[in-house]
Length: 138
Image (tube, rainbow, N blue to C red; front, side, top):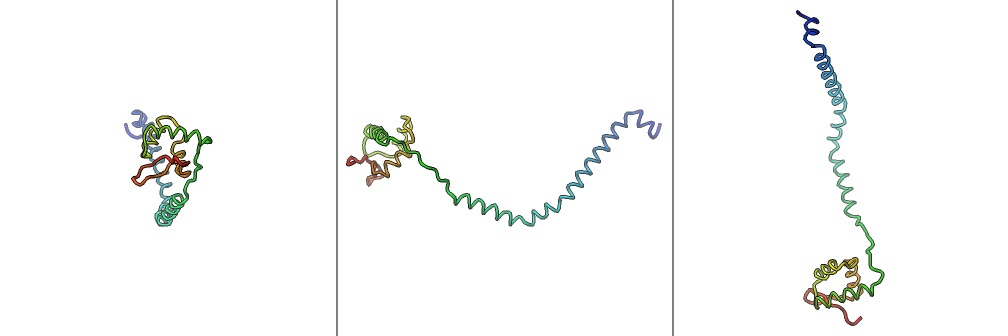
């Protein structure tokens, strides 16, 4: 048995159809890749220009600082009383990291911005040794 009779007898028709489709799809993909290779070459030639554009965009992002409005509690007197109690419990002079840690543990609202506001208002003033004290004159 030779030719088409042998192919039909051993179920070769399905295998040959699958083989032809694999070859056809591969050729289509190869032709698509070859037709688009000019874009890859152009991209490779302009890589320095595109790299400089990306670098400029990154520098612009780094130069523009994100300005966020600090949230300071409305009732500064109440906040100052709460922080003054913490400072009296810690003792003076006190380190700011310890005050921040205790204020976060106690659940006070916005401790970083509140302490910053106290320093701006000179309620908390630095001493010469790197610690801070509560200004009793105000």
